[in-house]
Image (cartoon, rainbow, N blue to C red; front, side, top):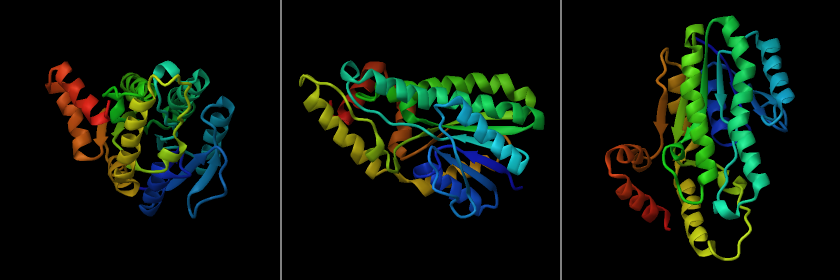
Length: 265
């Protein structure tokens, strides 16, 4: 059955791949970006800055005005950041949190009244395996995704009586342009430089060798087409998904050593 689907951050990367996949399956797809350059084929592109309340509300209303409903929301818009916590720029930290956490909250708050009135809906939030595993030099990013996970868990219980389902996607590394767009600004006296640059090379390499965005999109699309959603799904390379299992099974000090070695620190 065709659904009306809104995907934030759909101008590139996973959001764009998911929009294409769902459109090919016959769904009505609305994508958003801060500065859309026109529609992408049958995908209706809308302006939305998830950091701005008025922008989010206006885009949600536009979907309702044009389609009459919103069956699925995919919270995909986000910012990557890497650097030593001690030396990271506070303004950049606030920008990441405003986008990755408050942006998700704004979109959910705008979409939920529509879904309650309909008596049904699905909200997918693209989280990260990093929400479950603290990674060196990615503390801010991991923290933002961990916050989103707990929002997901709480919101599921709040809205299920309205026929609304909420789920999170723990994504591993995906072949997108996140390397080019990731924030990498910090003030250093040299204390972290060598260690961070080694770790950063690994971060970039993992993305370059990650799963193709279209393959991940197909996996997420299958969940959208299902009737009952679990709280979370993991998507990524087998080793990265295995890390979630190992963290539950291994003594914490052992797991920490594995992550340190894997990250080059």
